[in-house]
Image (cartoon, rainbow, N blue to C red; front, side, top):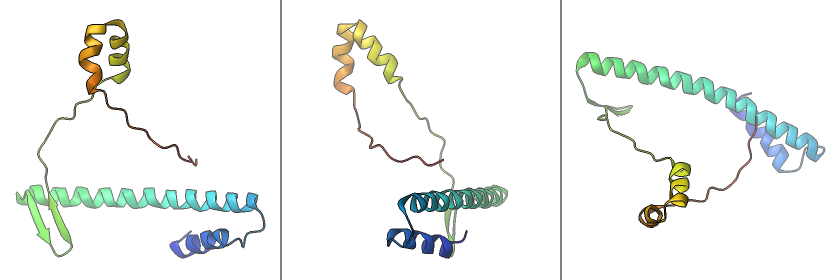
Length: 118
């Protein structure tokens, strides 16, 4: 399914030109999954292009490059730190003194639910 086919199918669904809601849902899921397969194929090509650019830059000793097509640069290595929130919550329940120290730094972010299509 190409872009035009997907756009046309979704436009038909959105404008009520599909016979019934079951058919509309089936078609919307079909479009979503078909495009998902293509996205994965393009992401694989994109990763290959990135690997090739990386190899070229390493071979030429560049850490930053600017071309008419865009720029590329290597970033420095860094650390990412995370904490086991379930373990810390459990620890806080068992130790009031520790809870008073840790709980003020606890941050909760609500994440909206969404539709999963497989």
